[in-house]
Length: 179
Length: 173
Image (cartoon, rainbow over all chains, first blue to last red; front, side, top):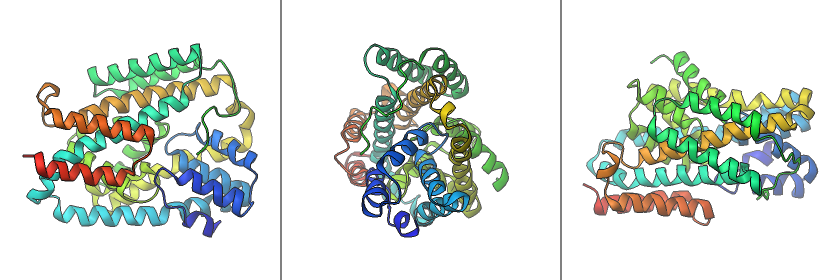
């Protein structure tokens, strides 16, 4: 597990790399087990990739396996992130950096919007139910624009509506292709 | 800001979020509205999160550093690790129930509404200091283009960030 996760560097292709290493190269778990853990990880709170690492690690080595695999995946990434941030903090007030941020702000906005669209697309059901799901996305966006300082009521409404209306068309296998 | 309070703020945001950047609207509310961080720092943390390795959710590490230095970064990271791992014991005990219809509906509702909130937050981040109507067209154009690139997944985010920085140098104030 150590080698497996340490080389997983991040970026959008992380899932694909994980599957390659864990399922195809090393054969630690079957593709079916990987897909099941992947589906479960999408139901977790917070960062899904951490949940996936925990689930696969637990399959391989119980609590210890889960701890090791999560620590392995995150330690290099966290260290690099802190170092970049610390380095950046020294130059963040430079006029050139300020000017560049006028372009970087819109990019991060685009990344956030694009990632959300992908996530909505992946979570929404197909067919008629998909319209309900996307209507909720539009309503939440509108609520977020109109009342940007109160995300909690919107999340609570989404939760209640989800239990009541979005649970139909039960499918065990994810509709989205695993990369 | 003491690291423990920071830990609690980040923990709350992660407990109430599902995937992607969905903790962002809650963090923005708790940190920016209360003057602990600036909109600019949110943008910077998101950019650093994408430039660095690991899941994009690690922008919280960077944000934690801006708010509370090294202890803040560690507190924010720990707060991001705990919530997703609750799925491990949950899956061991309740695997069948977790894949049941009402629970997937619940998570779908939260995921989709959180994603909608992130889109709204994203629009607010294009140029936090200006009202929407006064934002220059070129900044909107960058956001639209980057969102399209992200959906199609063909261009590495780091390239987009560098490109945006260069355009900012050319066209910014």
